[in-house]
Structures are given as structure tokens and as C-alpha cells.
Figure 1 (cartoon, rainbow, N blue to C red):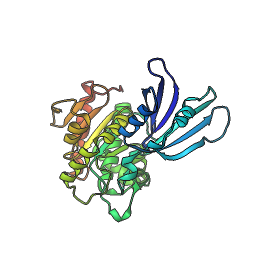
Figure 2: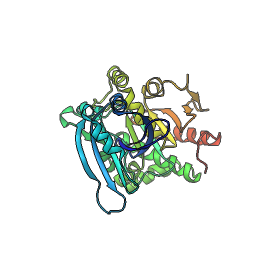
Figure 3: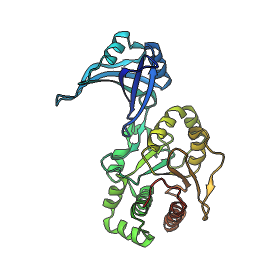
Figure 4: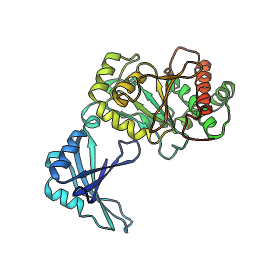
Length: 319
């Protein structure tokens, strides 16, 4: 998260926030009158450490560190004065980190897999957690996906993504036979190519097992709903479709993150739950990609739902 200072009329300072959360940049603003108001906001947002950075617009050089990794409580009037005294040629930033990511160990990062490959129409997959050994420590799911991940779950995700993007981009209806043949002929290369084009958000950022403990998942979401809500809010601005994969992702998302913006899910003609958010994309509440349901049926039912929703004008994009 990057905070840049400048003057504003209603409050003394208007601060521009660029949340990165390692998932690309998204901008927001807050207005403050003094140092204590800034500290209060950062603490509420679960920020632990901050750095002050400057960047000269005219010079082809890297940003410079003014202060590195001090706690929120250590921010002084001098630091705030430095931050707000930027010029036309120089931006000054307050770079902040989330407590959640650094203090809840081991932590598994997620988000937009590859910003260079993340193009419209775009899809975000909401998952439960990663099956991983705690002894492995913290690691980055996006790096794993860039390398092609593994076939379990991710073969289906890659085929779903291909079918969805082809249809929403050009109206082409990709059959199960075509997408499975493409996956088979390109093998891991197909999976790697498609997974670089998605975003993934796990509701639980710490390792899980082969099967999810729904009680611990619910407790985690309840405890960290503020950070999860912020991440979801940033990602939903960048995507056209959100797929909640498996129970209880959809109900947890609605109850604790959307809080709730709707009372119940709508249904497609083939019984797939969905909701069009007033301020954003379509959410489909679907099976987990590792479901015991046949791969062909998982693919066809999802594609039928996407085509129906597009026909009804639910998507905010047009073919």
C-alpha cells in the first residue's frame, strides 16, 4: 500500500492510497487533519510497518528510501511533514504492510497471478485454502500457478478459464471435446498459459489439508474479514466474473465479506447460483474444481450458465 501526500480543502490533507497487496495496484483516498488521525487509520487497517519513499519524476532512477520499516506508532510529525512536502517533480509515498500477511505465519500469498497476462474478460476464483504442509513455511501461490501448478483442480480451472474467456471475448462456444483436446495436446503448457491469466483468492491464507475443516475456515474468515474484504474489494474492480469454488465459499463471502449485500442467490435455468453485484462483476457459486462430478459435466454446466447470464445482459462487458 502506498500513501502519497498533498493538500485538500475540506480536511488539511488528502492522502492517496495505492493498495498493492501483491495483487496489482488499486487506488483509494482518505482525508486527515493530523498525525494521530493518520495513525488511527493505519492501525484500523491492520498496518504494522511503514516506509517513506520518494521518486523524482524527471530522473531515470529508482525510488529512494527516506525511512524504512518503522512501526505505525513510531511515525512522527517530522515524517508527516516530509510526506506532505512533495513537489511537482517529486512524489513522496508511505509504503505500508498488512499485519495479516507478516504476522500470521505461515502465510500463502495470492491474487492476480501475472499482471502482464491479466486481460479482459477476466476471472477471479475464490477458493478455501491451499493444501500444504506448515513445515514448508510461507510461500506464494501465484509463483506456483505461473509454473503450471498441478493437474488436480488446476486442469479444470484452466479449461473453465479458456471456455469462459473465448465466449466472453468473441462469442465462440468452445465445446468440451475441443477444450479437452487442446488441454491434452498442449499438456502442461496449456495449464500454465491459462493460469497466468487468472486471479485467485483463498479465504484462508494459512495451510490446510486434503479436506477443509469448515469450522476453522469460518473462524479464520470471521477473524480476518477486514483484510479479506479489502482484498476482495480491490480485486473485484479488476474482474468481470467471480467463481466461488465449493461450499462454503459462497456463503462465507456473502455473510462476512459482502456483509451481506443480498439476501439470497439467484438461479440460472440449470440451477446454478449467481448474483450480479450492483457495483461490479457477476458472482457464480459453483462446485469445487476437484469435485467428484464428471469433468465434462462441470465444464458444460458452467459454460451453459455463463452463456445464459450473458444472454440476459448480466455481464458488464459486451461481445
